[in-house]
Length: 275
Ligand code: MG
Ligand code: MG
Image 1 (tube, helix red, strand yellow):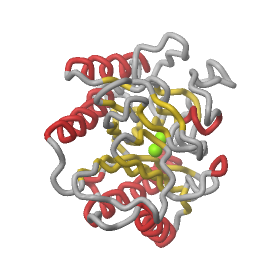
Image 2 (cartoon, protein in one colour):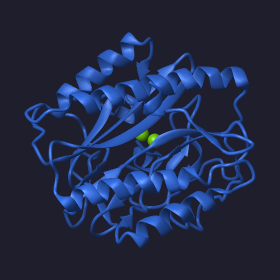
Image 3 (spheres, protein in one colour):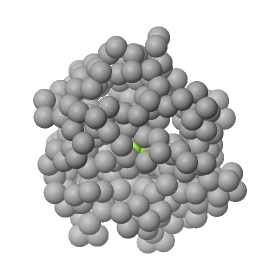
Image 4 (cartoon, helix red, strand yellow):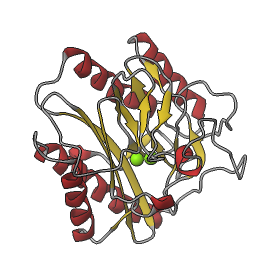
């Protein structure tokens, strides 16, 4: 889930920065231990969902599973009730970009590109992560889009280090996506994450001159979440006021991690390979 639409669900414009210039909160080692646990719960749920998705399931099935597992692990779903969002995951299929509402009416089919985004709130802190899942065999074009979206996230993460700037992350993502012939969605950004699901700063994914280019400091925790479209970068919001789709019905893919800034680099708190 991202910062912008939740505040302005039908208005595609740069996020309104209410506390302009404020840096992300620096977490203490103790707070980071709690955040690691919150993020680990998110990573666990996404890893399990990736393994269990099968054609014929509905996005509501995945939502019910995620909510149950988040609660079993002692956390609460970050998204449920957030600005009125009714579920524990955002589930988006194919041309859906972000903020898809899970429903029994959406049956997952072989060949779909499925995006699952979830968050967990544990002892005062949130973790937030998103994956794209290929359901069975997908088209070569869909497979490439997915691979580029994931690699773009890691290109951005590679720039995370105390002393670097948000623009270093954004530039790396933008250049990588462009070099692979796809488009970065500009309407949505990542965000600081911690005590609140969405905090300053807005972690933009392209060379954006309108948002504060914050210098990274050790102890900041950021949700980095580029969205990559196969066709137009432009999106629109459906009548449900949540679901965002590509304007040209082209495919969209997204990966997100909650990442800690360290003096020498980064730590991926939602790393699924460690759960
Ligand atoms: Mg998210
Ligand atoms: Mg997020």
